[in-house]
Length: 234
Image 1 (cartoon, rainbow, N blue to C red):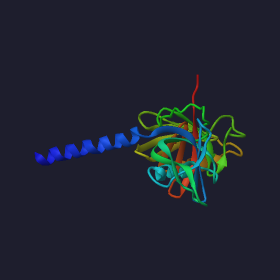
Image 2 (cartoon, rainbow, N blue to C red):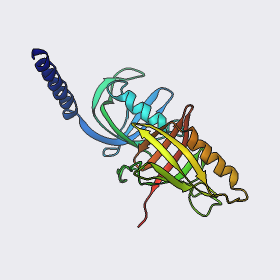
Image 3 (tube, one colour):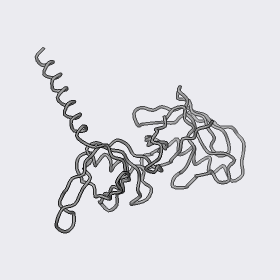
Image 4 (cartoon, helix red, strand yellow):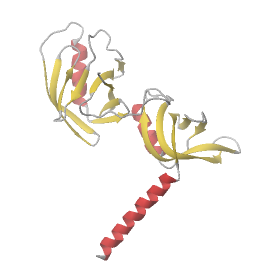
């Protein structure tokens, strides 16, 4: 009985400590960039440009950035709890302000400071292809409609692969995902079959996913495979 009480008290103390750390920090929104082991933050509200301290929740922020960044040094919107603190300059003498990240909240690709920070759901969302193995499909050039898929609440998947409609099944848990049991219509489309085959093959290779804002990222064993954007219809 004493052991149970002690464990409960420890749990309460940890929770209170975590709350206190977050409560003493400010919620901040701005652009984060990382290149050559240097991280910078651009505050949306004040316009300040600051180096980021390599402590606190910075590693989680850095990992999320590297998962979605397509170019070295690219600026991507992030939200976090943190504070600005005077620290010794990285180069030279004297002090300068650093961002100290207390708690990373989320990263928001392709959104500016005034953008909507809604987060799409994996299920029941029309996911339109935007990048496939490094190739851009911003408006599905040469295609009558977006290459896309939708996962229903029963985890059945359906969509359009470039030439044919397709169907299949999926399984997801935490950030892992697998697509299986694919079937397609049998129409032959000139100049589109190669794209279709690559798209279906990419889905089969997928083992992990991340959703940041309105964008879905699919990953294989060697890294990023495809990027999708949520599309809403009136």
